[in-house]
Image (cartoon, rainbow, N blue to C red; front, side, top):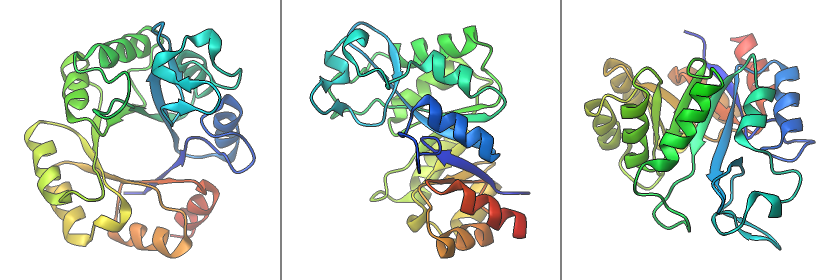
Length: 229
């Protein structure tokens, strides 16, 4: 098994994170895949942005698409730019966020768009919100789903829950795992996709553990280390 390297929010060393240029630069670099963040505007548009708030604009859930800065791209436009790569689509839906959706409609809308665009392969959908993971699983059973694990919660206990729910992966913070965690997850059939690994020593440690994916702000370094291995 070769560990894959995903560019965290695209290649944003020189470009704005989660922007179309950042994803195009990641593709040019030759990464295995990219990770991106999906949110929904007041008028129902799916956009790619990490933070809930945009300085000078407000909360994305409280404004319309036309009010967002030009650099904030729609999910559809980003997925078009990402053709030819694997994509980790993280659905930002957390209880403390404005616009939190307990109904599953955000998951449904996201999966409907991805299906319409022919993107039910070469993707994994992830979320910190377990209900959102469950919703995606029920809407698109063929699509791999990964539960993002909070760093301050017991990773093995949550991995067990992911396994029992039939999810395909867990996404823990890299500092919370060890070789026994990875071995147990693999025994359960779970991929281990770690975030966000940026230092060479940490990447080497993750490669030694045999994680499935390293999500990094420095994917070029990750690709070099994978090549050496």
